[in-house]
Length: 251
DNA sequence: GTTGAGCGTT
Image 1 (tube, chains in turn cyan, blue):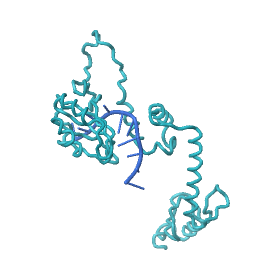
Image 2 (cartoon, rainbow, N blue to C red; image 1 turned 180 degrees about the vertical axis):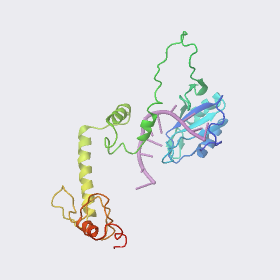
Image 3 (cartoon, rainbow, N blue to C red; image 1 turned 90 degrees about the vertical axis):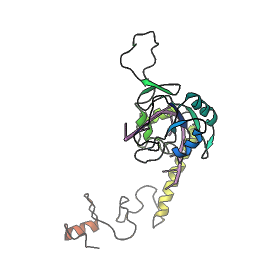
């Protein structure tokens, strides 16, 4: 998708991959191509997108044919304002298929047994990601500023907290105050939506009449028979009559 | 309609 050929990478033998970060979510490969093509021969422009949502993840990969052109593009386009966001262009460090990249150039895949006991210094085995990339991709965005630890595991949250202390400045007082305010604000919203504005007790369901909060009921009818063991007066009455084929006709 | 550190597809 979003690249020239629809059969994966066209030709990655001597191309130089550039990683473009901090681009807008609306920026597409077609928008980046003319911008990067001005500084050299762009072989391919690819923007990883989410499979479920289909939206861009906010970064792109631009492949140049020559290193000097790629280097020039990095220096020229790094920090350039594109679509309202200043992009960050740098050489890619990792490859799509575990290829080794030397200064952005795809050298070769990781060999199995070759020169293992050479005089080469033992580089760290843990390169970085490739094992948690799916994890952090799930919590890609927009769930970080409000509710944390709601459905994410503790290890995931801890991982993000420690690793992303970059522009994160929060004090316990601020966090506590905001949480309290937020909670109260939400409660007010619910009361406002209720037909009866009176809420004698801040806890308990605001409508203890006949419809639980689980039923998205707005008016008077539209209540199907609950599939569970709900013993609502209405449901029980209907069930007592015709539990099989009358509920559809009844209104 | 939202979000914002990072490293990629048939």
